[in-house]
Structures are given as structure tokens and as C-alpha cells.
Amino acid sequence: MSVINWRPLNRVEPAAFGRPLLVGRPNVLRREEFLARVEDILDRAWLTNNGPYVQEFEARIASLVGARQCVAVANGTLAIEIAARALELEGEVICPAFTFVATAHALKWCGLSPVFCDIDPKTRCIDPAQAERLITSRTSGLVGVHVWGTPCDTEALGELADAYGLRVLYDAAHAFGCSRQGQMIGTFGDAETFSFHATKFVNAIEGGAIVTDDDDLAERARLMRSFGQASPDRVVALGTNAKLNEISAAMGLASLDAMDEIIEANHRNYVCYREALHGLPGITVAEHDERERHNYQYVAILVDPAKAGVDRDDVLAALKARDVHARPYFWPGCHQAAPYRLDLTANRAPLPVTERVASQALCLPTGPTVSTDDIRRVTDVIRDAVEACRPQRVAVGDAW
Ligand SMILES: Cc1ncc(COP(=O)(O)O)c(C=O)c1O
Image 1 (cartoon, rainbow, N blue to C red):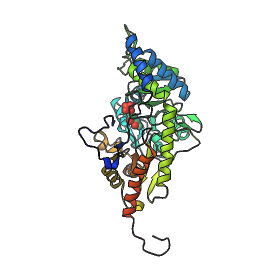
Image 2: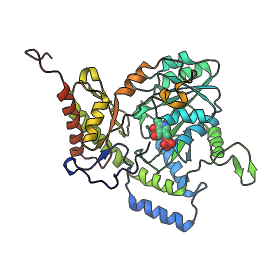
Image 3: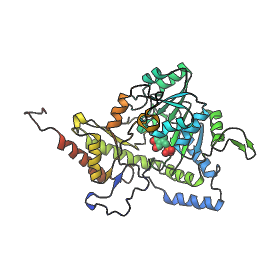
Image 4: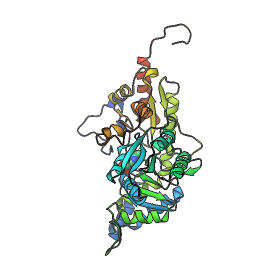
């Protein structure tokens, strides 16, 4: 899913449009601090295997989110896999289909059966009412995804878990640095997982983490990420190799150093998009609660074709023609991906909200390198696309 090589090769950039703009361009800040740490890593020749920078990265994440434990791993997908195994999930696990396919894949890769649940139209996160209807005697857990950093209804999911004896895991790949009712994401459910992939606002090039207040769970996860070895001659559990390396941790630390600056730029961009698109028929900017902490790393719009006169793909194409590479996110829903499409366990329930939101959602470029002029360029294209297709005024007054 990454767009690391964002600069088109062997191509003359269309000067008339300005530089290409794209979703997921990595934030590269604090270069000197990163390079100084790399020198240090090379001098010490401690490149991986729970090195000092990995330990510092874990300590800073745990303290930032207020969790007792942080186990850093090689990426966000492995974080979900290891958390699922450390939680001893089995049988069926209820999760949304409106997520990046890694959520479902990680569960399936562990031999679990994902069961797709619809989303709440307000939060775009898993709908607890439908989740309850999907619980069977084979269900062992609920996996919520804090889509675009908007938290799941953690109370409702917690109540379900208590009532039915289930474990709750949150895929918080989008929600590092966000809060729900003043409580930081990373402290809900039995465990939460983060991604620090290059496209995330805080990145370790590739990286991930499991955060939890459960010391035993963290201990099991630590063993699993390193072959289940308690010491070089003692294997005490089934494990894999999910270790984060020192260079990635150094990048993660540099990124954490710049975190406030990135959030400030993301927030400025979000406000700018919101104002520029305000009142445009059929275009809704996904709003965030300004009383909470938020990373604003995704600026998502929903294009309602009945009101806008154009659909999401028309807007996407109009933007692409001006070298703006927005992303339908997430499209298609996981339930339509090849490994799940014909799976009757996974596809037990209708997912009308998922299908509507997946067909309307579009994420727009943001981050510290995106200026207010860039945003004006993007929003002018969207405005032109919508206004060109609006029905002509047919009556006097303001009626359309
Ligand atoms: C919601 C969600 N879950 C999981 C992942 C997987 O993270 P990673 O790419 O670090 O493996 C991503 C990555 O983009 C994601 O968006």
C-alpha cells in the first residue's frame, strides 16, 4: 500500500500543475538526529535484537500513550498477528471489512476466521449492535479499527466483551497520538496495535508496536517476536521473527521528535480543506472532535453522487489529471478481496454502510510538505468537478 517512490521516474513534471501531490508521502524530518543515531548504531555494531534504540522507542511510545507495556515489532501487520496469538484468540473473530486488508489478513494468517461486521455511519468504525448479532459459540474476540484516527465505540465493545467473555483487540494503525474522551488510544481493550509504516505520520520506515497494560500478554508477545526464545538455548514458545531493527527505531525516534510539528501541519491542512470545501454540495469532510487529541494524518472526504452530481471516481480522475494522487481508502472493502469473497463465514452479514462509505471515500494529500496553495489547487479541482456537473438553476430564487 505504500507510495514511497513518489517521484515519477523519467517523466517531465507538468509544470502547469505544480509538483505531484500524493497521499502517503513519507514525512522525513529531523534528518541530522536520525543520521547521528545511525552513526552511533554502526559504531556500536548493535544492529538488531532488542537494541538500545528499540528499547528507547518502546519506552517513548508507552509513555506517550500511557500504557504499561509497549512491544515494538517489524510492522503493523505482525503486531496484529502477534497480539492475536498472545491473546490466544481462536475460531471466529469479528472485525470490520472497512479497513486495510492487513487487519483481516493478519487474523486469517493466524488460522482464525474473520467475520465481517458493518460500520457505524458516524464513526466509520465497527458497529457494536451488528457485532453482537454476529457472536456465536465459536467467537473468541472482537477487533476494532480506529478508522482515520476516529476511535471505535470502546464502551459498547467493552460491554459486549464482558457479556460474552470475549477479548478485545484494537488495530490502531491510524490512531497513534489520538484520544477518546481524554484517554489516549493505546490504552483500550486488552491490547492495541500501531503501524509505523513509512506512510504513517510517525514512521520507522517499517515498524509496528503492541501496547497493553497486561504484563503477561506483553511477555508472551516479546517471546513470540523473537522465535519464542527465552535465551539462546531455551525455546519456550512458538514464535517468529518480528524484531524491529535499530535503524528503523532510529527513524522512529526522529519521527517522534518531530511529531508535534507534523500534527500542527496536519491540523492546519485539515482546517484549510474543511473551510475550502465547506458548503460544496455532496462533499463531506470527515470531521474530528476538536476537544480530543488527534493526529489529523488522514483528510478524508465522502462524495455523495446524488448530491454532488459526480461520483468519487470522477473526482479521483479529475484530481489525477492535475497530478494530484488522492486515494480511495478503503476500497474495496476486505469482504470483496479474493481470499474472503466466497467465504460464507466471513460474509455472514450484509454490509450496506461499508459498501456505501467505501464507494464514496477519498483521502486527500496532507502532511508538512503540503502547503495551503497546494490545498487550494486540490480543492479548486474538486469544486470545479462538482460545479460543472451540478444541474442548472431551473427556477427563480434559491431553489435548484
Ligand atoms: C488499518 C491498518 N491496519 C494495519 C496496517 C498494517 O500496517 P503495516 O503496513 O505496518 O504492516 C495498516 C497499514 O497501512 C492499516 O492502515
